[in-house]
Amino acid sequence: MPQIMTQLEYSRHRGVTRQAVFKMVKEGRIPTITATNGQLMIDPEKADQALADRAAIRQPRIDEQPGYQIQPPGLLRAKTATEVYVARLKQIEYEERIGHLVRVDEVVRAMERCAEAIVRELDRLPLKAEELAAVLAAEGVFGMRVAMKNMMREVRRTLADNMRLLAEAEAEAETPQPPPEELEDE
Image 1 (cartoon, rainbow, N blue to C red):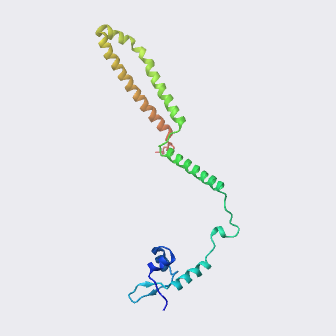
Image 2: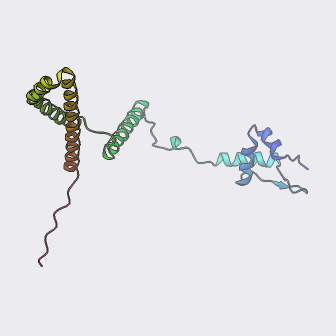
Image 3: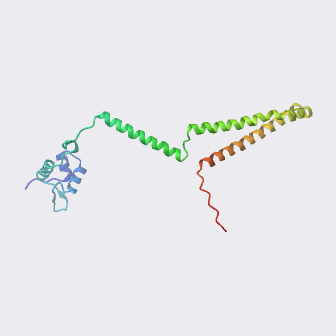
């Protein structure tokens, strides 16, 4: 009777892992013998022959197929770089659509509008000269400081309101408006 082995012994015989042998047994690539205790045993001669036969009839790899051409590494790198570039562009488009990115020209336009609003408010300050002169005459330097602080608070509040209105107007301009519904005849 030929010497039989456990799956572990056969894996050592072949120089592969026990898991590899277990997988080959499970797939039916290696014939087994069931021992009296129910354990699957392997006849090494039959198993080696079965594996040798399978290797002899194996399908050739794709690079062994007739007409297969290996692409030069430069071309592969170029194709990969192109795909990476396209993927990054799509990511940028996505980020822009969900509002995480803003175009530079839009930011510049918004900054110009904000600067215009600030300049308009600053241009109004000289109109307060008479009021400040009256406060200085009536309450002195301390009263003038208080009046100037109040004016600055008013300028800040006006600027904040103007900036909010600018942002709302910009948001409305970007939001597509539904077509007006026609009035129904009554």
